[in-house]
Amino acid sequence: MDYPFLISDICFSILLLLLPIVWHYVSPSWGQDEFALPLSFSQGESLGVLDYNLLDAVKIPLQDPKTQYVADSEDGFPAFGFKLGSDVKMARRQILPDTLSQEFAILISAKPRTKKGGFIFAIVNPMDTIVELGVRIAPETGAYTVLYLYYTDPSVDVNSHIIANFTVPKFNNKWVKFAFRVTLENITLFFNCTETETVLVHRNPLELVFDSASTLYLAQAGPVIGEPYEDRKFKGPQIMILMEDLKLYIELMPDTERKD
Image 1: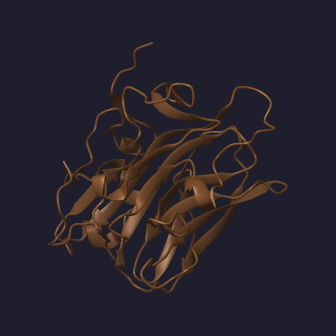
Image 2: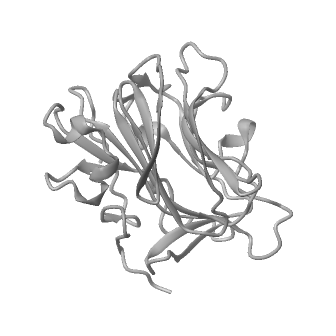
C-alpha cells in the first residue's frame, strides 16, 4: 500500500516523516507546536530554532520489514510501527548536532501496544551504558503510568540520570501526544496538548554535549540498557509501539552545523 508523504496531526505541526530531512529552520508562524516551545524561542532572544525529526533514523524503504511497519495513525496518516525484535538506530552525529541548547523541547505522538513500557528513544554513549538524552514510559500500574525524561553528561557521569518524571493516566493501545518543554529552571509536561505539570530542576551542565560517538536508538536504549518497547508475552499482532511524531526543537547556536 502506498502512503502519501505529507503528514499532519491535530496538535503538532506539519512535517515530512518519510523524507530524509534532518533539520530546518522553524518558520516565523511557528505552527501548532508553539504551545510547547520555550518562550525565549518566540521572543526573539535566540539566533533561531532548529527542528530535528528523530524518525529520520528509520530508513525508507524499511531495512527489516519483519520488525518495522508503516501503519495508519489516528488521523489516517502514516506512522512507523516497531515490532518485536526491532533494532532501529543511527549514529547521533548523522542526525543531531554535538551540543544540545540550554532550552529545548521534545514532542512525541505515539500509540503503545503493550502495558510493559519501554524507551521511546534514547541517545546512548559508545559503551551503550549511559542514556545521554531519552524518554521512557514506565510499565502501567493501576490506572496510571509514568513518563521519564533522561539527561546525562557522559563526560562525568557513570549512571543515567532522570531529571524529571510525570505521572499520567495510562494510555496503552491509545494514541497520545505529549511534549516536554525544558527551560533554564524547570520542565513542563504537555499531555494531549494540555499543560499538565511543571517541576523545578537543576541541570548540570545547562548545555549538554553529546559524546562524539553516541548512538540514537528508537523504541529501545541499545543492547546493554535494553528496555525495548516490546512484550514477548503480548497476545496479538507483534507491533509494540507506533510513532507518528518524534521531534526535538533546539536553539540555533553559532557553531551548530547543518546536517543535510
